[in-house]
Length: 324
Image (cartoon, rainbow, N blue to C red):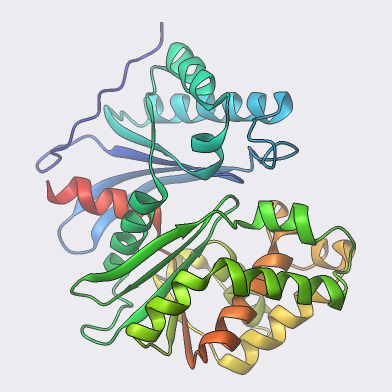
């Protein structure tokens, strides 16, 4: 018999930890945490599985059988871990790949029948809102000056303009790394002609972003988790410094170092990237188009300052839950 998890929106005073699952296109994350008045939350467990839910089928809008099974296996693994840690309240949030897949609803039914976990699919706009709350909770946003948050996912990329006080504008674009890799990164290393094609595509696809930034100018980019964690890790490791992500909530880049590492990634082969300490396997290939997007945004918007926030969607969900 599986344990049935109820979604409860009021957590103050609870002794048991709560869980948030971010079920992305590339990676499923499980964060088990307890409220902490001093530091927002105390992490009990953070686990992730490279399910690659969009592999082979993201352009067709379907979860392929191999990816489907990896997703089920990951959810059963998370279910066991939540039982082991006494979790009785949780939220499981699904984003681009699952909300766009024809068999996404069947996957959610299968997960519920096997584990009792009820998955919510959220819109891109809601996703962007959670990302903002997560980044805001990291403390890296200025109080009044406008910053541009960018979250590069496998299926979508979210952009949010705002400050510590409010969201000014937000939008989700279905141009995630898995989609762009399938379309533009067919040869490795990625040829300059393909990089230029991707630049031209982004110049067209992100017109709404350019209009928003023209109305609310900013020179500060905050990259939320994901690829930006990899960039930070590679920068520090190449300088000979140890880098433990758990020791950081935010990281401020030297612009020259960031552009150097992203250019190195764009020009690298699969074997070279796979051999680089600091790149987790699921990002070995998608980090290339993520590097192109990052360089494009910095160039196109004349960004002067870049910061990485280790907090993103799952921490945003925690922020909402803990203040209810």
